[in-house]
Amino acid sequence: MKRTNLVLLAIVLLLVILPLVLPLPGGLKKPFSGTDNQGQNAIVTANPDYRPWFEPLWKPPSAEIESLLFALQAALGSGLLGYYLGLRRGQSQARRQARNRVDASD
Amino acid sequence: MHIAEGFLPPLHAAAWMAVSLPFVAVSAYRVDRLMREQPQIKLLLAAAGAYAFILSALKLPSVTGSCSHATGTGLGAILFGPSVMALLGTIVLVFQALLLAHGGLTTLGANVFSMAIAGPWIAHAVFHGSRRLHAPLAVSVFLAATLGDWATYLVTTGQLALAFPDPVSGVAGAAVKFAGVFALTQIPLAIIEGLLTVIVINLLNQNSRQELDLLAFAPGDVR
Image (cartoon, rainbow over all chains, first blue to last red; front, top):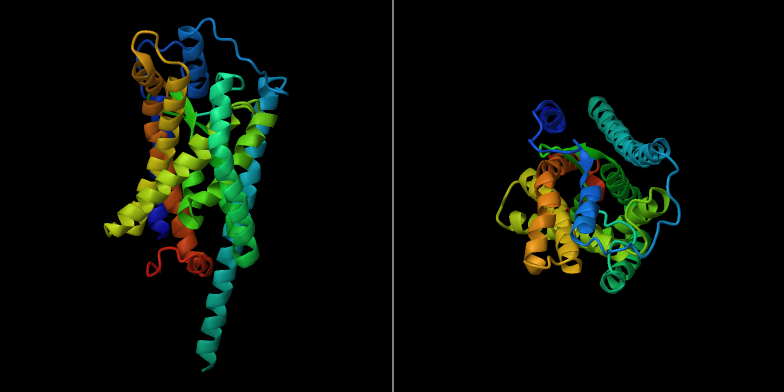
């Protein structure tokens, strides 16, 4: 199981790294821009008269603050998920040890 | 898949809100009942929510030279059922709309529908379909999470095409255009989500079998 997971993780890493080292498709204006922004631009280009009728209540004041908040989001998630997985692993190891102790004392 | 604030005409925004609201209401009810009836699985539920938090925060590069993010909603959908994920996905989307100016309040209904409703339901359907065809657990999980992720972006494509049909080629033409932005880029990222979800399920199968049994998840697949 451990080996399976390591292999899967290696494939994930490969899929993330490959786009960064492979040559970019030709005609790309801005490499690695977000699809959400591209979607927005496609709307504006095709419908130059469209005006967004609502603005975000608050915007991160700079790219740094934005990346701070994205990092915070990922960190909160990882902290909780890591806590959960670590807790259960510890518990199942403790159960296994307790079982072995009982078996040994039989 | 985040449609930006104000980027759906008011009528479309309201319609998607109306479609999504009942799902989220039912979801809140289901989550509440789940936590009262099976308090032992609270932590696993939180972990599934955390997984969606992580994956939707990471914008990953794709071979198309664009960046996009996974959704992370497939895991919870196959563990707890799709209706539970509507609430968890909505929490993620509200966080991003308020703090990151990513997505928006007016487009919340549409974004909830693609990421927190359509994705989880597709993942759920694919998972149970492939289990019924006796596909191995890992394969079913992979297909469910991958296709659920991809479906989310196809729904976004459809939503934008309906709102902004091409003057010449109509909704279909606009769908092709928006699919060009979302669908291709998302394929490797959806595969990444599929693989990561298999890893998490493997870990759960190893150490959280008690909770999985409570949820009647993949009985007989103990390793």
